[in-house]
Amino acid sequence: MSKTLPCGRKRAVSQSKTDRSGDLWRPRLNEFLKKKGLRATRPRDLVAGIALSKKSHFDIQTLVKDVSFRYPEISPATVYRTVGTLCEADLLTETMQSKGGVSLYEPSLEDEHHDHVVCIDCNEIIEFHDSNLERAQNRAVESMEFKPVRHRHVIYARCLKLGKVED
Image 1 (tube, one colour):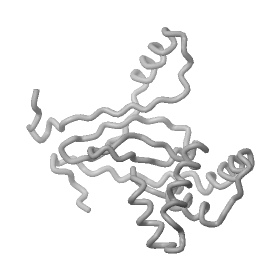
Image 2 (image 1 turned 180 degrees about the horizontal axis):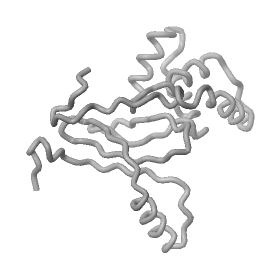
Image 3 (image 1 turned 120 degrees about the horizontal axis):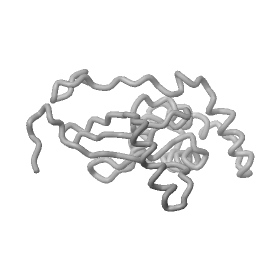
Image 4 (image 1 turned 60 degrees about the vertical axis):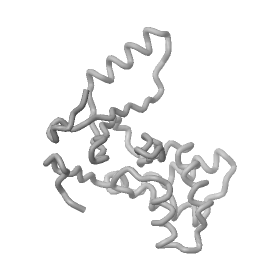
């Protein structure tokens, strides 16, 4: 995979959130499963380990392929169910949909919030955080007498460096 995008920007190389957080997901997942009356199983743990070690956004089909390559005995249905469980446990977040309408996910192990810009020319996903934007969103929601719990902000944009910007 090239380290330079068509526009000349350097491709983002993110460090795995599990690498930064260690195995903090295991106790969180086990606590969630216990509360829900579900068993901790080896297949679920293996799928969670692969999903939560991803270094970039991914779709379920990519995860199914990665899991079946390493653990052919784990069915795609187990992967799909585990993704649902990880999202419900707030360990995995559905961040956006790809160009083709496929849901993309990323680990949500840290409290650090970020938003996304998706380049519609090369599909690169750039993460960013803007305190002013966060404050404006919170003010808007609070002015309507709501308390913000979570949000997903994705901006689809064309790269000005490519000179393809259309009105």
